[in-house]
Image (tube, rainbow, N blue to C red; front, side):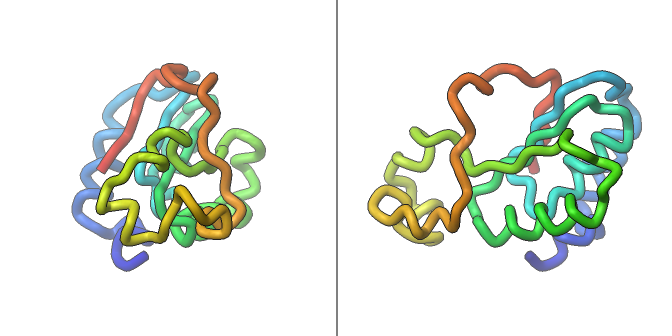
Length: 128
């Protein structure tokens, strides 16, 4: 995942600083493009009641899952998913470089898209 996975990348560091400057107490936070889950976990540590990490790259979701497992204090408050199904069904070049999402369930590597009922249920969306 390169420099994004450590929290040391300048954009991640800026987002971490921004999260620290706002009260996240009791909020539901969505980290869209979560990578290794650093921002989603940080939001929880800063008082968010729940975080959702979404990424288009199954390897990133695996890294986020490993970070979640290493941070047992987060409990069941962080969920990880692919974007909603209709996003994956669109024919964008961005998704094509990660495999053919429409025709190969194996390309999803066991990850499930975010359910429709979760749409619009977040107080804050973090996106880099």
